[in-house]
View 1 (cartoon, rainbow, N blue to C red):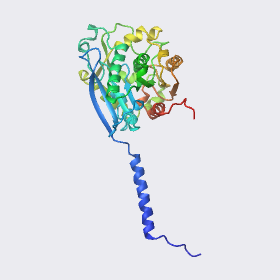
View 2 (view 1 turned 60 degrees about the horizontal axis):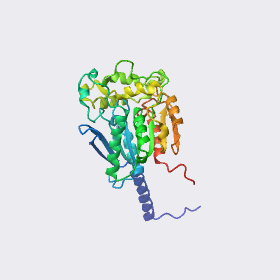
View 3 (view 1 turned 90 degrees about the horizontal axis):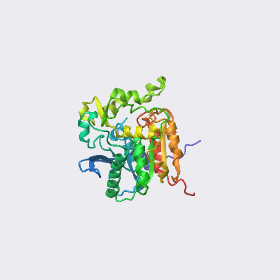
View 4 (view 1 turned 135 degrees about the vertical axis):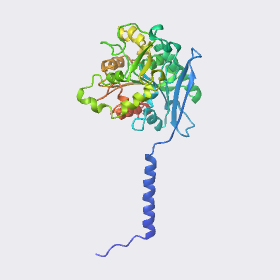
Length: 354
């Protein structure tokens, strides 16, 4: 059998060039977009002496901002927003991940946390002043951030996400500001306890409490089976988080972190006393509850109980992740967490008819 005609060298060259072009284009697509980052403070609405730390990330060069692609995150009871939501574990933070999907992403620290103003009570002994920064105050601080964002971006409403106590902050805010919220993500929702909370105790509450890294690690892995502990947090991740978190409170010299006790006063008065601080029935926006099975701080029964009270949300969803704790956002299964949140935020209206 005689060989077929040979392809001209010019054609071979053209094919090779086309193949190289496709490979180069694929590599370019694989590179995440560059991001623009800005951090600064804004004034609180009730006290000109209080300044609230905010951080923003979005794709570099973005000039048009749509409210349905803007997300604001707030932290929980003890640690600031930036060292959870914008901690580059393995080179990537959740804030990066959301921004790389074309979103305008924000975080805020309420007063007494992270980069926000620490009131004078935090420079005195804890017992010298009563607890401060309760949930209504924190919701006002979130409101200041929302108002700042909608004005800066020229939009009517944005999306909100809260973690732990932050779910009460965002939930309470939404009940009175549904008109400013597109969708709501509640990560490890706070609801009524049927057992003793892990934090708070029974003694007198001062203005604030102090936490060590050792205490934080012990609380993080509480309730995790001993044979699962070693693989739960990838090597170096806890240390990276702890170093960044304790550095936000220079007064502790890297050994202790101060946290306001307003949240603990609320837990005692409401959630541990068998009554809700606000009514989830008044939330009228699409809502995602996301939780992990080994969460000892706010166990699954709380998320399940909360879910039943979302009676006026246009639609609601409850996702339970396996092999994760209260801090699953910074554990081995964090990408599952990222994907579920992003799926909820990015999806078209699931009630629309095809």
